[in-house]
Image (tube, rainbow, N blue to C red; front, side, top):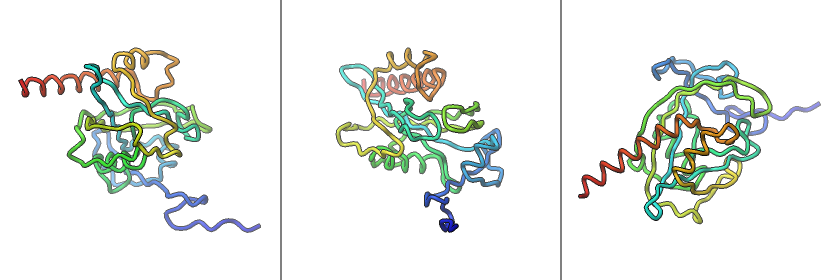
Length: 208
């Protein structure tokens, strides 16, 4: 029986292998690099970015939320931040955020367009996909508030099924429901919302 040739840096299906830096609790690098699958199976701490995209519509703050592709290994069909992704070995968080926004949404952003909000570490048993694993992530959270024309977004169908805008208050209530099918926690969203509201108030004071 002939087996397909596996090229360097690619899996058997021809997809690029993601290599991740394994981190210490404080976010510093251990010097160990693992493939994404190995890091997940080992429950090893690795870096992830999450980008919250907002707009003000009729005086109300709204968030752009994506519905994850149903073919995703984790949280298929769940609702998530506008974009998210693993930080490849050798890359930094803001580089990854810029890349993921382009790949998943077709948004061309510059590093200076992204506002850093905070970092957090999370670990949980991931059971939504075909195989359970312990996902141990150090998330770097960014905020993007430049104008976004929804109709001009180019979605990466392997990652994103659809996107829609949601009112911040309604989203906060939705995230608290046990059956929300949202992949970010209500605690994370409350912290994001607090940070963004504070920054918006500061900007208003400067303008007045």
